[in-house]
Structures are given as C-alpha cells and as structure tokens.
Image 1: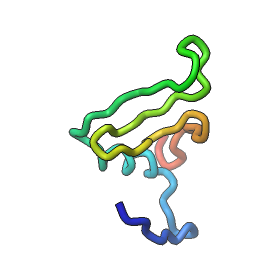
Image 2: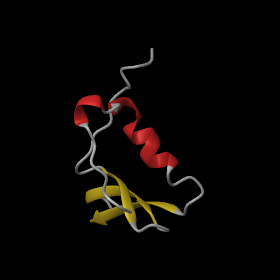
Image 3: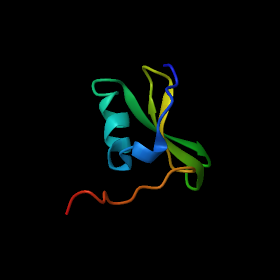
Length: 69
C-alpha cells in the first residue's frame, strides 16, 4: 500500500475509521492480544490478508462522530 499525502486541513476526520475498515471488507480479520492473556500489554484488530494493524488499542482511542446526531 502506497502512502498518500493528505491535506490535514481538509481531511474528514469523521470517516477515518469507516474508510479504514471498509478497505478490508471480506478479508480475514483477527483481534490479537500481546503479552499476558489476563492482562495484555496491547490488543489489536489486524488484517491477516494484508498483514496490517487496523486498530491498535495501545495507540488509538475511539470517540463518537461529530457529524451525526
């Protein structure tokens, strides 16, 4: 996957998660924990087909979209 330059001033932050997940519809997806199973150091949503981390709970947080009620 090529990295694209993004104009952050005109970026729609409300669709980041939507677009990231949409690109992996139909792929083999796993939720993976790292470290101790009872107290993991990290938990990730990973695409096994692309070998890509989609969501890393150690880095990302999710908030409600601000463009819908």
